[in-house]
Image (cartoon, rainbow, N blue to C red; front, side, top):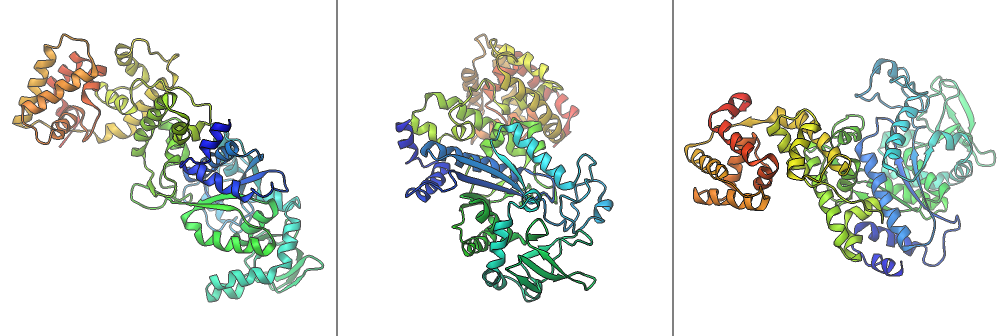
Length: 531
């Protein structure tokens, strides 16, 4: 362990770089609370989306790295701000008209439009928990409503009341003139309507622990800041939570840079140091727009998991968190194949390489073995030419290519075959556009077909790849990638594809020859889209 810890202390993998900041935080003495607290936040105003998962995944990676280089115990809290008022009805939920009636109520009191839980907040919390549980995260779920109403925040809320002027001095310069006139860090929960009220604080009594505000009907009301009678504004709320819980580490998106800055100032005004933070870049959809819970654009967690295993999503999240990435369906095949490439590399790597391998940060020391003897990209192309409707069709080819493979001995490959069929039918098949070959391309295809007819050796992927290369060179393709693009567009109906020698070995020499004949006769163009 000592050697591993020493290597981890110098590893350039970003989770270790983050973890070393926490080690430095407590190099003089351990935390008084007895543990290092990691936190992730979730606003359940919309359905959980993939960015929420990414935050928990990445935070878990830092936590795992910290546990390798420190003996201080850790906790991870996933905190849901379900006491926030519903400001607008999301566009991707049913029964939107009924939800309009619940505007301004805390999310934990808004009726569930899906009819499955006590509230909209509870519904979205359950969705989040179910997914995090399915991935095996070790975390503690925390509800803002429960923390406020149970009194767990009371001491911190009273401290915020004492430091009211300091909080206002931090916040007011960041607000516009109109907002400054009505701003208060405390949002009363109206005893009349149950609404979360955005109203100024008219009076405050530190000794009594109360504030006075005015209801929309003009009545002045005095309420305690404790016991769930108020909720704090977003930035002061975040800071109060850091202070109350002693949060040591939290990451957040680029759009919250200002919030992190102001919350850090407020936390220090309350008397806490504030956490170590990491700002990550945001995910964009296929149009380059930031993905949003309320818009429902980009990929949902459920959508990714329809087409690939969750470990591939973890791999995607590991990659360069400070770099913006496009998050659309077409990133899935690449993520799957790169994840398995890293799995295959791991057993032969030394300790330094292993600690820099993404699969260590996804799985910890218990890294599984990859059984993907056929890549996901190849499975997609196989599904395309075979017109596969189920995984069994693909297994007919896989067994011939790898006789020792089977669903029971290669479960990840079996799952990938199922995913590939779904992905093919949903995304590849509708976009397939075959084209007829040109005169020179036809001659090259005929040559490849004839060479395959004379092929008597075993269907070795590398030897077949060399033969495909030889045909392209013999027919003057320059650059040679134009020859492979011809194969993809004419035979597969796609603009890109696999190493073609490997495809022939998997699909079959005779079957590939028949595929070429179908293309030359115009059968493929007639059966699909045409360019």
